[in-house]
Image (tube, rainbow, N blue to C red; front, side, top):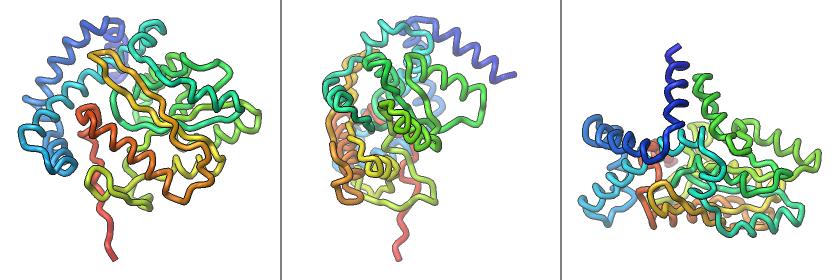
Length: 291
């Protein structure tokens, strides 16, 4: 019952314009950073390890910018539930769309890899920039709470994207290939592997980091071209997304090379504008065992 009440409250709030919701975001920032101190130790530890050359004052500045952005991210994401297609296309602009269209005209489906950077939920609006004859799969991890899982599914599919549980993506890809329907599948490349999948390690932000290789496995298995998305926050509530061609023939690469490529590209984006990444994420909770 409580979940359903919260569901209704969020739906009503999503009707409000962003200029009003940003007032809530400003209050939320003060509460999270100064009052509750939400994961401040995790954030500061991640920042110190990732930017060893920055001063304490610089790290605190990045942390404050991150908490501001995190609160904006939440209200922006829920606002998408009742945002018009015209508004989201005005607020989230995709550049270099010809990169994707070139592959689709060649009859090739493709993979896009991104991270928890900028407002990754708004990336689902890319379906508005694509032909309706192409499926846009957005991978996600289902929530245990069915009410909130349903809510996030509605938000993510608002503009035509097809949210797919991460364990079902291979089946969806095989099915689309069987019926000859093109697809564009979005993978989050900075997820933390669970203890059973600590198979690939590399340096990322000056730290020994385990990286999931599922994106590479699927790209190599079906020889799917891979592109990267770089999201820039132009100003509050406005983003531009640059579509970057990463690899057109992953089957020709050595194992691990594609994973290094997309991870290093994300690293570069983070170093350019660090406050836009999800620093409260426990990215480095696993340590490599040295035999």
